[in-house]
Amino acid sequence: MYCWSLMALIVSLDAIINKLHPYHKILDSSLWNDILTKSNLPNCTIFSIILPPRNIPHVVESSPSTHCQEFNTHLNSIITSLLYCGKQHLKNKEYDQALADFNKLLDIDSKNVSGLNQRGITFYNMKKLQNALIDFNKSLKIESNNLVAIKYRGFTCRMMGKCEEALEYFNKYLQINKKDAHVLYCRGETYYFIKDYEKALNDLNNSLKLWPKYTRSLNSIGSVFFTMGKYYDAISYVTKTLEIDQNNCEALKIRSSSYYQLQRYHEALSDLGMILKEEPNDKVALCNRGVTFYKLNLYENALVELSKSLEINPNNETALIYRGIAFYEITNASTSQNKLSSRWLLNNHINDYNSAFKNLTESLKIQPNNVIALTYRGKIYFNVDLYEESLYDFKAALKIHPNNTMALESRSKIYFNMSKYEDARVDLNKLLELNPGNKYAVELLKEPELSRCNKKRKISD
Image 1 (cartoon, rainbow, N blue to C red):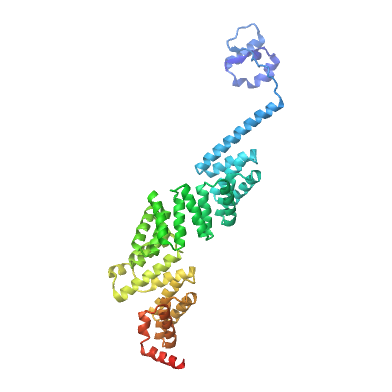
Image 2 (cartoon, one colour; image 1 turned 90 degrees about the horizontal axis):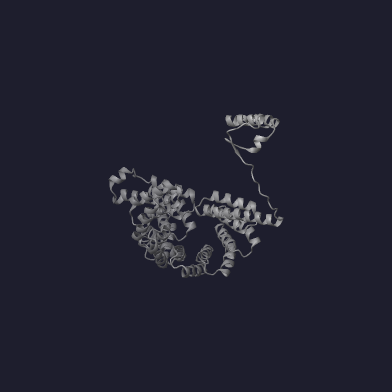
């Protein structure tokens, strides 16, 4: 405020009145007084600091090409900065910020391949797969052999379930770069999805040659072997994963399922317990643990785990079925063999088949053709002497699975109790065809009513 250019002190009085006076309030009062004094009395001494005139150097005018060069350099600097910032946001999973940077970049240069690829990768991570595909397609139109676009287009197609297209792009990528362990893994997973297990195993093993401790490939080989019914091989591969990462839940899930199939239930329970330490609300692990307890006849433990699973997902069909069966077995035990503690039964209000019936019926609303649910509900109807309803469920189960021995055995009992001896005999003979040593069938066929039926049958033959 105390400095003033010399020019301000030699302007005319008219200019001071017209140009400066409207703004004099923003000036220091002593400066304003000095301006007025100097304009009226040029030789009078003033006290404000006067700056010399500004020395503006002569600017040499550059050529248009130099201007363009400078502008392009500046533009490229902006693009580089946006690309860097966007990548950093992408790395930190700040997808909205990354998208904003890549959008700005592409507003400046719509054909920037790196920008298109990075925006496509951002869309891919945001599960906006159609948008991702559009960006990768644009990138490949500009640069047909761009490996980043080829690879991620394959990833995107795989995520969308377009397996043939995914394989096409994975093949193209691997022709150029044969040593990418992750792309080999993804192609192997794609072959696994379309049930080409030999090709899947080939790719996954090649992936491991490049990266021996790649746990995704180890787990996927375990999954392929599990699907092929080679449970020991499955256990072998996922155990290698667990040697690298002892808390790898995917490996524990595959191994626990393999142990279950081999009827090594205690080992299955151990693995499921480890999963639940890492992920306490894993509804699948809770359900599988409940089913495994059921297989060990630990029905109380089974109910606890299955109930937890159903709190998370009330429509879990498997949990509903096995909780229903567990209630059924507990009720049978309490009414006939009295194996379980009466205190536990009293505390949990289980003194009939209502809980079992309710769970099985709920499961049949979700999957009406479940043979296990139909068979056990039929057994409940039979135990409470509702033979027609029981017969309906067993017929439905046997229509779906004609060789279901439990349903055949139970239906033969109903026919016998309803004095339909010929029908009972047919079911019992079918049972003996399926299982020649079935003691129940052998003993029941000795009953006089069925013996007479057999004799009549032989005469008529």
